[in-house]
Image (cartoon, rainbow, N blue to C red; front, top):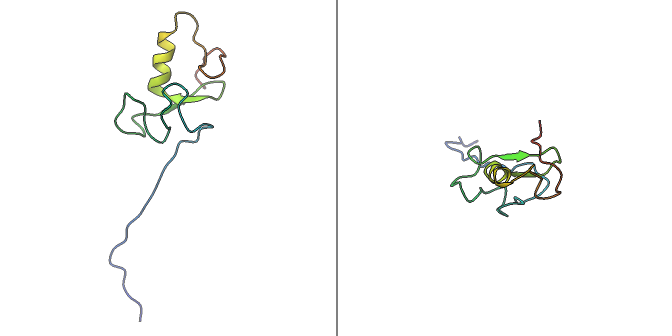
Length: 84
């Protein structure tokens, strides 16, 4: 008749919902992580600006902190504001 399933293996994948596939600062894939992190995911999140460009959180924080005046988006040069 019918066999009994004794075990199963689930497979899942995730991806960030960003317009680009790579960070505009470090050029690493969003599916991976920034150069400062070892594992992708919650420990290396993406952050969006008001201009809708996305970056690894650690990359954009370094970028913003390295600017001597008002920080601008590295992609479109608009004044950088975190998307609220």
